[in-house]
Length: 126
Image (cartoon, rainbow, N blue to C red; front, side, top):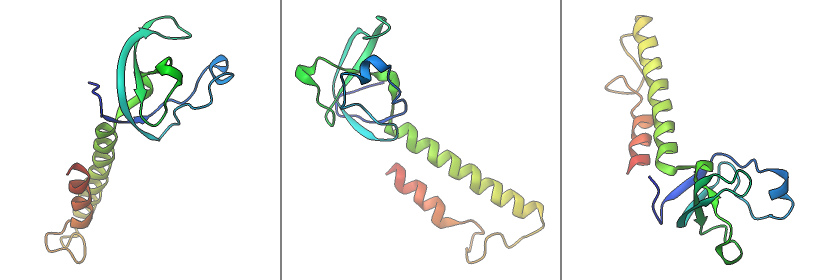
């Protein structure tokens, strides 16, 4: 699931107070990072074995601090989610238009679909 060079998005930037007291260069929710290396080891505050990620954008002192992998999602998943939401929105618009008896669909579109929005999702996958 994880690989070096992979782009990831932080989805959890809530750290325990004791981490915040000595660490200042921490991941921020919604920010994109690149995996520099991957290791397995104990979590600093739960002591459970977990996957840790070292990030290009957040170097740590002598690579002694890795960030838990469950704080991130691969960038592709975030893009897929955005496209799925857009597709659902477009489907709802088309179905609503048909249910209301509007056979013309979307004005200015030969097919009756909002092609510009569909192209936008295609670009995100390119």
